[in-house]
Length: 460
Image (cartoon, rainbow, N blue to C red; front, side, top):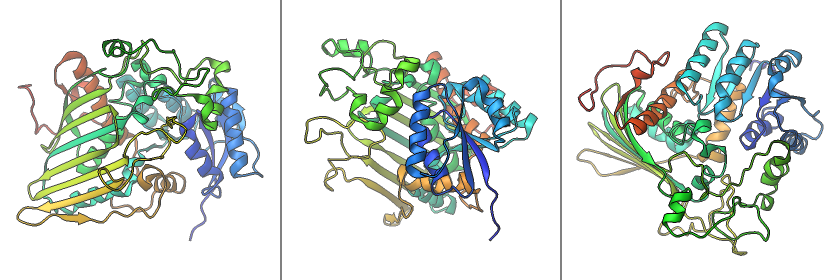
C-alpha cells in the first residue's frame, strides 16, 4: 500500500454544513487531512468549530482564524492544498474562483452556484488555473441510489424512456428552508437550485445523460404571510425563539438545541442573522411547490415534483424502460410528531422518527424491478456503511479525503456534474418566471453547449 500524503485544508464557512467535514478531518481521515484554518466572518461560529475539534481531537491545536477578505492570505500563509467550501450558496462562485487563483483546490458543497454568471466564473477559473473541484453530491453514494444506478446500467429494464421523480420534504425539514437565508431567492436561487440540484444530479447520473430542456411551474402555496392570512392564522411572532417558549409546531426555539444555540443564537449578536424566522412571515420569495418536465439528450423525459410541507419525508422514483420498470420508494421520516413533553423536534438534521411503527408507512427503502412478462423482484440494498444520507456520507468523505478509487458507478462528481444539475434548476426558474419551456443551450453554460438535439418541446 502506498502511503498517502497529508494535505492541508482550510474550511470556508463554519455553519452547520461544515461539521461533517470538520469531524472527518480530525477523526477518521486525520492521517491524510490536516485541518489548519477557518475562514468565517462570525467569531461565535469559529468558537463552535474550535469546540468541535477539541471534542474529537483533544490534542489538536485550534485552527488559525481568518476573515473572508483574507482568503488569499490564509491560503498562502497556511500553505493550504485545498479548501472545503461550506459557505452560503450565493458566495460559492466568488469563494471558489478566489481560492483557485490563490493556489488551492476546492471541495464544494452543492449547489455549484446560484447563477449562470457564477457558473461561467467557476469554469473560467478552473481552465485558467488547472485546479481541481470536487462537488459533494452525497446522495450518489447512498446505497439505495447506487442500487438503482446498477439496475439501469445493467440493462435490466432496457433503454430508459421516462422518469417520474417525487420528493416530499416534511414540516420539519421542508419548513426549515423558509426560516433561514434560503427563503430569499436572491441568495439561494430557490429550492429548484439549492435542494433539487441533488435530485437533478441523481437523474443525470442514473441515466448517464445530459438535460436538454425544462418546462416548470411552481409557487408559494403554503408558507408565507399571504397564505397564513388566507387560512385564518392568528398574528404570529416574527421568530421562534420567544418567552415563554412556544409549542407551535412551526416555531423553532434555538435555545432548545445546544448546536443551534451555539451556532446561531449565541452568534447573532455579531452579524444579526436570524436562523429562526417564522415560516409565515412576509419576505419569502422562493417556491414551496415545484413541478417540472425535463427532457434528456437520448430522448427520455422526466416528470418531477417537490413539495416542502408534507407530513412525511422521502421520495419515490419510477424509471420506465423498453424492457421493464424500476421503482425506488424511500421513507426517511414517517411523520413529524410531538415528543412526550408536547414539543416538536424541529432541527432538520434530526433523524428522530416517533411514527415508524412498521405498518402504514415503515421507514426504509425498497427497490423493485419488473421486466416485461416477469414477476416483480425486490433488489437487495446494502447499508453497511451506516451514517447520514442513507449511508452515503461516509463513502463520500472517503473519496473526498483519500481520493476516488476505480468506481464503475462514477460516483465522485466534478464541476461538469455541478453545471448539469444546476442548469436544470436555473432553467426551471426561468421557465417559472416566463411560463415558457427553456432549452439548456440557451443558458450558454460552458461545457454544456454540445447537447444532443434529439428532443423537442412545445414546437420550439
